[in-house]
Image (cartoon, rainbow, N blue to C red):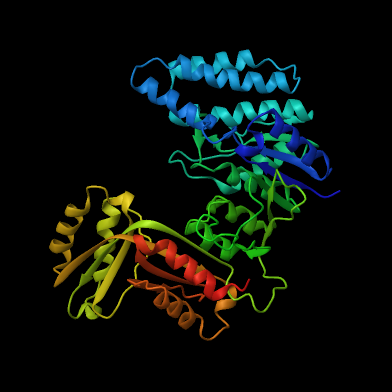
Length: 439
């Protein structure tokens, strides 16, 4: 019998009705042996995710304000879920322990992780599977960096002696036992790490959408589904804003060459999107795989005559951002110009200080700042072998009246990134989609 690891997101475990759907999916295939769950998500539009409620408890504690009312909402939600599923599970002890630790050591990571913890306890009881906590299996060093080899060994030792198990996603532990969480959406990473450790045949990621679409459906109506995508293409799309799967979930699966299948809990018969190392067979007319992007970037353009012969110029420029702990998105350059693209949220009020450092260290001839920029990535392995792709893209934007402020193409020729003004973002995506995707 093969092995499948199935991760179910917040919408799949939002309430008893969704959990019943999840059980039917799991039990329909005996190869689904290891299950990773998120904290319960929203049940309806105005509802709250459990993780958000837990963060709210933390905020109340930090303000020395009462948090009992918010905590009771969490208690009531899990209790109602357990009762509706007809479970005989003593959640009261877990609630008491969590509340005690909230008051004695209220770390944000510990508080945020309890949604996944309780969700996994309920799911394990409902399925009759073993509950396996990830606190001592997903291992981080003292600086919070994931220990890949140690984590793989710990997960393998814990799981291969169990026929079936449910694990909470999103968190692991420091060497001293304290809880360490991934960034939001990190249960995807947990699922990928489990799949790698047990040598799964497939890593299924169950959510509330039927795989990836070629563009954001809020921008492009009836955007076509992507049936198959490579790890490399997915990495590019995820990085640029396609948010069905956490971008860092790709690495463990890719290392072990495990296909990832994005599926929809509410449409279990839909095959979704399969993510693999190779392209497989594709329609030769499919030049691009998808389009993704984000708004709100700033571009700092530095000009200096004879920059190209000044040894260490770019290194000195980048060292300024390192000093301020600011990540960089792209560095397009010319003979005497270098532009740095940064997400606006990281700059905050640091821009004047950065410009001052540039003036002191680089002595440029001029510096220009371009605000309210958007980046759009057109991604596809078929682009490299096709002449005229760039011409088609730029012509489409020209005809749509979109001014291109920046162009950056990766060395793999698998993507073309253009910078446009925020106001042109949606128009640009629709224009690119129309130019390449035949209905």
